[in-house]
Each structure stands twice: as structure tokens, then as C-alpha cells.
Image 1 (cartoon, rainbow, N blue to C red):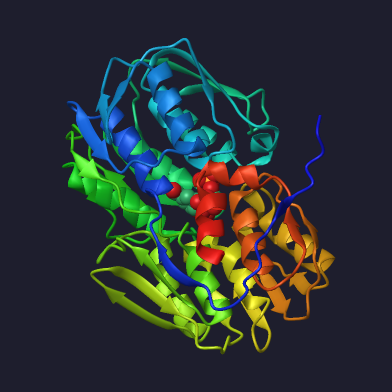
Image 2: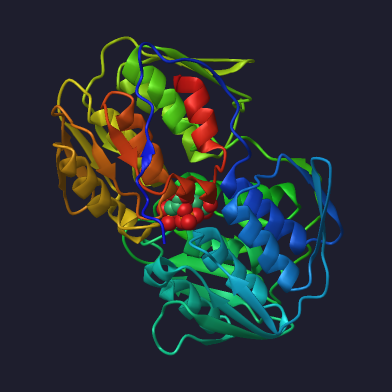
Amino acid sequence: MSVDQGWPAPSATGAVSGRVTVPGSKSISNRALILAALADGPSHLTGLLAARDTSLMRSALVALGVGISESGSTVTVTPGSLKGPASVDCGLAGTVMRFVPPVAALADGMVAFDGDAYARERPMGVILDALRALGVRIDDGGTGRMPYTVSGTGSVRGGTVTLDASGSSQFVSALLLAGARYDAGVDIRHDGKPVPSQPHLDMSVAMLRERGVQVDDAEPNRWVVAPGPIRALDTAIEPDLSNAAPFLAAAVLTGGEVTVTGWPAETTQPGDHLRDIFTRFGADVTQTEAGLTVRGTGRIVGCDLDLSEVGELSPVIAAVAAFADGPSYLRGIAHLRGHETDRLAALETEFNALGGDVTQTADGLEIRPKPLRGGLFHTYADHRMAHAAAVLGLLVDGLLIENIGTTAKTLPEFPELWSELVS
Ligand SMILES: O=C(O)C1=C[C@@H](OP(=O)(O)O)[C@@H](O)[C@H](O)C1
Ligand SMILES: C=C(OP(=O)(O)O)C(=O)O
């Protein structure tokens, strides 16, 4: 086995400026695939992300009996009768390991789930218990973790379920996406500390409503999905605004100007919060028909930010904060310990290994800027750790990113797009 010497992160020789087009949103793509698979007819999807997480989702749905074909840039999803036996590889994709079991519960037969080694560490018990409460047979050997099997009978009773989704919004989204197809629909009640990632919940609800599903989310911490058909819908997937973060950060840190094309005027994506976040760090942000433009002003202001709604942005935000004029406090992100890796521990360890001064708190990170030196930055199979490392590498000579290929989880083109923009 060859030893990974690390990918030399390009350093910025001046202000980084340019235009970037990022591919489709992971979160919208995987929701669109699930909803099309459960719909009342074929759906045509354009702009679907082609990356590891979406390819795992496609394979999972095909294994269950869904037809998926591709012609040019259009992916056609044709619902089929859902059947086991089948095996699903979840990789490290939260959207596959959480969103597919409620779909597999509708299949007739047994569906076995497994994934990457670290996927077994990611929290799963809440969604498995919720499915059990809705009448689904699940065997996880009593672990509450992967691997597990879902043994369906072709229908799910559904009804009311109470769960604690403070560990991940995906537990709620998973039930929302399939719930209309359950006999009694689903009435989800959250009981616990606040549910993170509100934009992702809004995304699930909005995408269901676009397909004619009745969802009542008027009461806090409760979502009621009426039973009924999910209408097929031809739709274009928005660019992934969270994956735009490192490119825009390059402008903030180098006093450059970067435009991300096709930024939607309205969206439920958490990445839209970057407009506000980068403004708070001191950048100029403008949105036009051409896209979103971020211009670095030469001043990077230390910030106190509650990132609970937009946790997936945290690694890149932490990298920007490492060069600010004062300390930054990132709060509300304890649930990042259950992401691709324990992101709070990973960011603390890797930034400090370069000479940084980062401390984990109970629910976030304190980042006190210090001069950083080069070295090998470990990425823990986490695409967003790689993005954070690339951002640091702009201003730190000799930074090597271990396993840059991990960016294929949601943006396989990252190394090329990054090199093109920075050099
Ligand atoms: O529903 C989704 O598509 C996602 C929800 C969020 O999960 P958590 O609520 O577990 O953070 C987010 O971090 C993840 O990248 C994608
Ligand atoms: C947390 C993330 O992914 P997942 O969908 O695997 O949970 C992420 O992309 O930052």
C-alpha cells in the first residue's frame, strides 16, 4: 500500500479572484432521488450531483427496485415495486444511512445496510427506534448502529412517534421524506435539546410540498405528514452552496473577489447563510443575476457565531477564523461530533498540529489566531476537513492535505476547481 504523502495545497501568491461554478447540492439531490423513487410516476432531474454520496443513493434505490437511467444531463427516476432481498452500501453518507431505511421499510423483503468503518460510529439508534415504533421490523443486534437489517412487508403502519433529534436533523427528515407513503402518514414529535440544521428541515418540508404532500409544521418540534401520493416532478437541482464555502473563503482571506455562479435568489440551503457569515467576518458580499460575489477587504474580524443551523459550514468557517484579527467562538455545534468524523476534535487536533490555538468547548470551538506552519493535515475521510485544509493552505506554506480524494464525497472536482481558482 502506498503511503499518502499528501496533496500540496496551493498557496495564494496574491489576491484570489475568479468565477466558480459548483455542481448540484448533495442535500437537494438525495432528497430529489428519494422523492422521485416514491412518486406516482417518472421524474426527470437535471443538475443532479454526481459524487460518492449521490452515487450511493442511486445504487441503494436501484437495489430496492427503482429504475434510474441517464440521458445527457437528465436523470430519469422511474418508481418500481420495492423489494428485498437487497444490500445497501451507505459509505459514509448520512443522507443514505438515515433516509433509505424508512424507504426500505416499504419494501417487501429484507434489506441489509452497511457502510464505511466510521459509518458504524455515526448515530443511528434514534431513527431505527422511531421506525420500530411505527411498526417496522429492524435488527441491529441491539447496537443502535450499523450494520442493521430492515425487514419490510410492503407497507408501514405509520402514525405518531416521539424521538430526540438533537443529534441530527436527518432523523426527522428521514421520516418526513417517506412518511406520506405510510398508511397513517406520520406525526413526528421531537423531545430533547433543540434540533440542529433548521434549513435542512425546511428543505425537506418544501420539497414535499412542491410534490403535493401535505405537511403541517406550524407547531414547534412537531411535523405532521398526511398520507397520500407523492407527485412526480421534473426539477433542476440548485448548485451546492455549502461546497461554495471554500471558494468564497479564498476571497475573504486574500483580499480577492470570487463569484459563485447560479446562486439562487431564494433557497432553503444552509449555505445561503454564508452571505451573512462572510459579511460578519468583514467581507463585502453582493448578490446579482451573475451569482454571489464575495470581496475580501483586507480586514478579517473575529466573530462569535451560532452555527447550529448551518453546522456543515463549520470547518471552512474555522479556517477563516484562524486568520482573523481576534478570537472567534463557534457555538451550537456539539452534533458535529457525530458527523463524518468528530469534527470538533479533528479541527482542534489538526489546527493545533500546525501551531494553532484551538480549543473544543462543550458545544463548539474557540479559535485564537496564531501564525501557522506547514505540515501534513489529516482529513479523517471528511470532505469538509479537506476543504478547511485547502483554505488554510492559501496562507500557510508547505501544507499537505492527506487523502484529498475524500472530497469525492460531495465534490469530486474539488482539487481541479481549487487549483484553477488559486493559481
Ligand atoms: O439533511 C441533510 O441533507 C443534511 C443535514 C445536516 O445534518 P445534521 O443535522 O446531522 O448536521 C447536514 O449537516 C448534512 O450535511 C446534510
Ligand atoms: C454532515 C455532512 O454529511 P452527511 O450527509 O454525511 O451527514 C456534511 O456533508 O457536512
